[in-house]
Image (cartoon, rainbow, N blue to C red; front, side, top):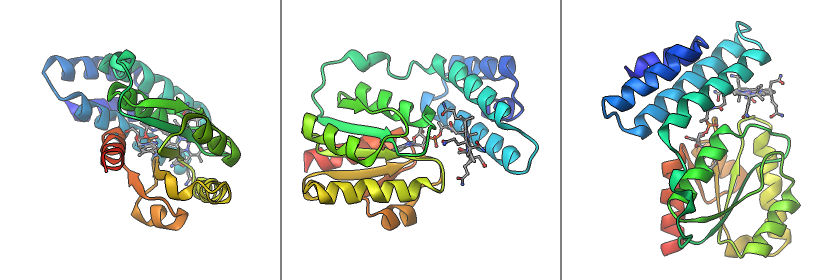
Length: 208
Ligand code: B12
């Protein structure tokens, strides 16, 4: 059933994908597993784009299908719960406009009662610094899906250093290609593959 989700998305079949997600949820499949299948479909879309089979318009269509299909997962519905987990600042780094994964992380952190300031996309380093000062956040999250975003993350961390904030703020990074090596390269404190990892990182740092 989950293959149907990733294959539907990879083939840009809107109705089939939305129906496969509904079917999986009706069969009590964990929403996190359904989301992972949607994400896998997006990875396949990206591969088809890399090989020249798909174009930008296809990426845009995939993004739209992803949003419609994953809307059934009710991510963030509980976001109105009183914030008590602590302040977190997050955004997609400068030069990068991918926001689907970042928005999922924001919704899930809010659902986990964190007080999240979402700076949006293409966020310059100094905007992160300002928001951390304004909110007193102890955690900042940088999202990025492009290879060039790693250097933007590095610059964002350098700006934290320059502002004298680096020792008081934990930095997490995430988004498609980020892994432990990227985490080390940019000088972050942790990296996450999905929103659950983001929550785990925040929890471990805020409770420490
Ligand atoms: C949809 C898409 C687009 C859409 C984005 C729409 C939107 N509103 O976001 C559009 C069409 C705009 C787009 C544009 C471009 N794209 Co694009 N895009 C994709 C695609 C297919 C899917 C991305 C996605 O939404 N995935 C689904 C989400 C749910 O996954 P996710 O983002 O990884 O997020 C999860 C985790 O990573 C994690 N996470 C995310 N952020 C964070 C943050 C923290 C702190 C933590 C802990 C965790 C975390 O949690 C999320 C939920 O589980 C990817 C392919 C891929 N492999 O990812 C290419 C891809 C990222 N794009 C690519 C490219 C090249 C581009 C363009 C440069 C194309 C062009 N020539 O113009 C432009 C760049 C524009 C820019 N300046 O940013 C390349 C990047 C290659 C590279 N190595 O740099 C990819 C990999 C495709 C490919 N294989 O070639 N794209």
